[in-house]
Length: 341
Image (tube, rainbow, N blue to C red):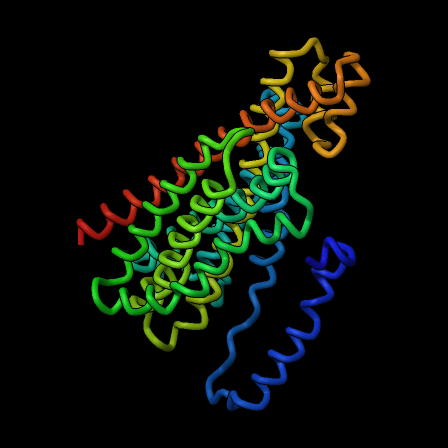
């Protein structure tokens, strides 16, 4: 609604009073106590290495196809990325206060919980990149309409989180997480069948199922990880979960973008006599895609819009197919991990 009435800048500005209110609430309610033990040192070396290696890896995934996977630039960047990650692992294993304590991963439930959280982040970051584009390009929704269409997913998370907490006590965290990945797979598979004539009921139904899955993975995956961690290590454990959560989102967004771009561009070039450069411009600028096709080929704007929508949907379906695979990976990973306990 803000995007429609005001501007996209307000999406960030609305966070300011919320953050201030949260900080004030914490100051008034949470007790502050000075620790009586020696505080661990900040892992500056590990943090710096991750700040360098993660963006390079995302850049490699995003641009490797444009440069050529065997090009000099790609190979040099890949080599540098590998060296940085190996160095990071070496540093983390030897520093007295690492940013990632790998000893925590010896607990199977912690490993499964963090892994599920990574795949959750991969899924929703990719989905929330591509779904608003679909609602705009295919269903011709405005900013406010897009926000309302996304609301069923996030609303289900809010409504079902208490239910997920109750289910954890009844059947265990990992079974709830596994069910969540099944819901993710159903939602993503449902969306592989979206087309120009899909009704709003189908869209909302797929998003409701997505929200159910999200609620069943978000808190239960953290609960599974934390339950296997000694209380004195909870702060470090939450830091690990948060770091890997962000890692999964960064990689998911990069991979999802690449899958969409190559699928949509390939379909467009297969149907129209357009160069790769022009096809890239069309795919990368969906708001003006029809005008680009009309300008270069002289087709009517209506026909150009239909052609681009079909190319976009091909890319969309490929991304959702990727998310089906990610969901099934999460389900079988949790199921096998639980079965072997």
